[in-house]
Image (tube, rainbow, N blue to C red; front, top):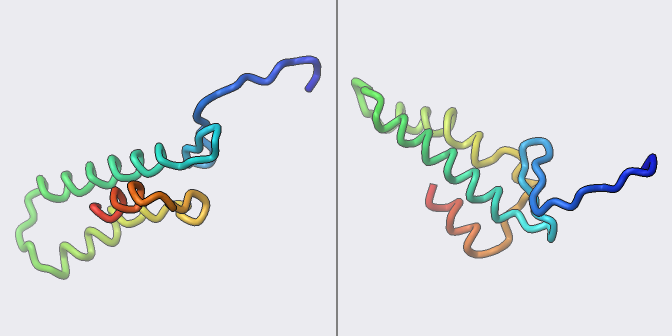
Length: 89
């Protein structure tokens, strides 16, 4: 490519999805779970007057699920450890 060497990397982030050189998405699973857990912690720390089930479910669906479901078809977790990690959220 124009007489330039391509660099070799172990991970690459493309469109917000981490993929390793061997096309495994374990880093994306960890990244997603960490981000979703932080948002869950923020919801828990925030003073909400009524912790009604509908309110909490609405907060979860609008703030947490988008992080977990972002581009899931591209990095579909197929290893059991990744699935367990995602299911904990």
